Amino acid sequence: MNRSRLRLLLPAAGLLFAFLVAHATRVRAEDLPTGKIIEKVECRADSTLSYALYVPTNYDSKKKCPVLFAFDPIARGPVPVERFKDAAETYGYIVAGSNNSKNGPWAPSAKAIMAMFNDVLDRFAIDQQRVYATGFSGGARVACRLGYGLKGQIAGVIACGAGFPVETPPSAPVPFAFFGTAGIEDFNYVEMRQLDRTLDALGAVHHVEIFEGGHAWAPAELCRRAIEWMELQAMKSALRMRSEPLIDALLKKEVERVRAQEAAGSISLAYAGYVGIADEFKGLRDVAEFARKAAVLKESREVRQALKVEKDQESEQRTRVRELYTLRARLAGAALSAENYTVETSAQNDSSYTPLLTDEGNRTVRVAALRGMLANLRKRADATESTPDRALARRVLNEFMVSSFETSTALLDRKFYNRATAVLALDAELMPDNWRVLYNLACVYSLKGDKNKAIEVLKKSVQKGLSNASELEGDKSLDAIREEAGFKRIVEELKTKK
Image 1: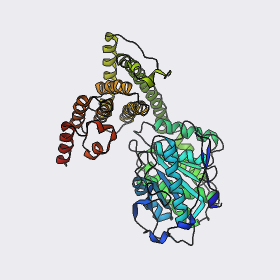
Image 2: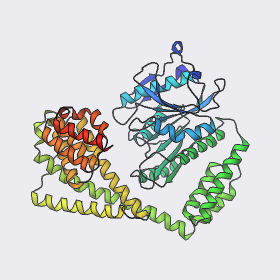
Image 3: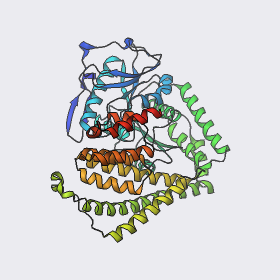
């Protein structure tokens, strides 16, 4: 594939953008160190855009190598590079993590992605049949979007903590190999389980693996597993030369891991492991033994019970989330009515919102009901023993808190400040110990010009856990109170605590 012909399809805008390579200004790869993470490599085409980079020690400009492009939801380029660097060193991958692509409007991220692609493709000898993408949360959706946008040009996607974007649901044929991960306490856990079943039905090349943890990048060891899985898929599809010693080594490693799980009594994990081995190594080795083992374990009491618990938990999570959202929506509707949101000119043209009117008596009952649900979930979530019930409670609570953040962010993006104030004030009432909710409320008060309330709520946010002074100093939402004595005292106190 010719480098100059690489194209990125932007589905939302329906446009094609070319990755244009500026050969005249090429910076030699030899000028960049190997075997270490470089946190910031500026793009030649635009020095305001950059990426973190890892180049394996054995990189040879005379040999083409695979590349993994990484996307974090808040533009922390070094984070994914750190997670994948050991696997990259072992298997000869270059890893580049964007320092600019993040959740939010697509156009700025698309610009950053193109600049990073161009820069890496020009600096290094890249095997363009082995271009991979990875991401966490919103970054995972970016990676999947690229997989469809660059049809046939992204060999595989490693999606952590989220799957496909709403506007690009999975459809056959899926043009890339897909490796998904999610923490057992990740609020997107159910989404990833459902996606696994959907990709099964589509006949897609895929694997989804669950780890102990929450909404986060996969641990480094699982990132290595993902790369090794991609190596196996590349050999199956002839994208890389077949290596018998590597196949044997990876098979031995997986069999030892799964048999250890079985010996420890983790039968449901062993069952999933044998299913994975039979699928991953099919066409590379005789997997009949592992398929038979999986079939036997599937009929065991432990596995049948585990599958039932998983199904029941998915159903309960949907039910609990629906209940919380319904009560919160009714309360938010009443709060927005009380805020007299129609004073906002931009809101007058928004026909998507219809306030729900409730009297104070109903509000008191609903607040009490919602607080009771949240208190029950917190009690279950605080259990010391790791159980499916604790994981479920944490997933529901985290989904509720993320919903609060996303709702208020969407309102702020549209400059519906009164609505954002009402929604965040309600959430602060429901979650009085959540410093992030209080911080966001302080930002909205600042944007509205209510300096006294902004500083008052910011103080409460600090009391509940806000500790990063640099976040306050760099947040433009707080510009209105930046010169106020109260704000300066808060910043100085936070710096003193460090």
